[in-house]
Image (cartoon, rainbow, N blue to C red; front, side, top):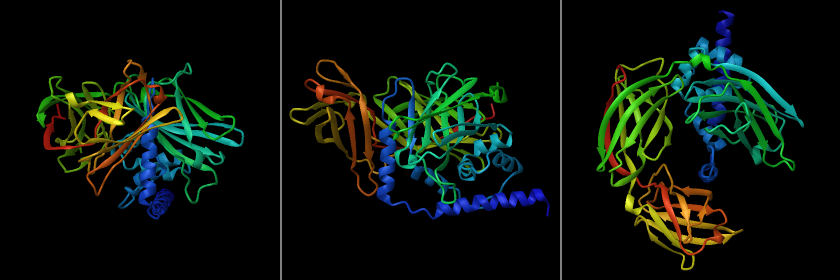
Length: 445
């Protein structure tokens, strides 16, 4: 048996051990619900230049729980792990993304290995995978006490120290049972909607609980030439009608790290479409290519799927189960703080509570027919009777599995200063309308 084969076997054993640890994690339903809500509340905070999603450590564990079946290691993947020593628990997450795995096989990992260390703690950026649409950043934190309880904030800065106009997600800190104390490893998943990756990127980690906020900054170069001119656009231009609403699949854009499906909604539709339910791409072998989110615009959406850049299917079918939509004349909800009543909006939305706390207005709603919903009830364009605008400070919702009624809440920043009635526009709505569909995508054009 060769040394290389032994190395592969040892790596498989380490990955299997990490998987077994996650399999043994007990996640109480209430704790999972609280963790998801915490992520949603953080996600709903308004950003002027960017949008940020935070997920919980339980969410990260749930991703690892998907890591089932026989663990086999290709030479490219083994080399990948060797370049990120001690991060087997993180790279096991990447194995869930077929597109990223193929990008790794094509040697698209950029090793960084740069550390900022002070005040007894350190942050290391181990490596990145990037193209024009997405960047996955592997990082490690050491020696920052209590960060698992308090958490941290992350900022992404360009060469001039300015915030990047990007959306990105990262998990709350969590440690592995056999890791060194105060050591945390994970990824930052970045989406480039309005810009390209910069030539140099700075990641700033801010400890939330420190009396004097400690910040660790890591600046590193980004080699954009590895994926230069690799973008492929496949025209589709097919229109479907769901629940009486016209939806056009405009194009599929292939990148090494993801596939982006651009969808446009007919401006003459009678409903505002918030989401198309259960979207998936299925190839000729019956394999489903997962979707990991979307970027929603005023007239449509861009849906992100696992990349099939290095393995183009012979046939590809887009499937879905329906959509979340609301009549355009029911988008505005009026709230009377004096009588604590609701006016307008969809029939199934009820105001349960209106109260003032620390100068903020807190509103609590119930939503009927929201069984198994995957999105919540959120608002935008909040104004009082004088036209003064207010921002959403926090928002969250509690989905229902067993019952048809879900609950949602929103905190309006300095809402106590509102004069008269509050008008709020619904920006997402959890009720799903069943309308299954299937559409062939011409990937071989």
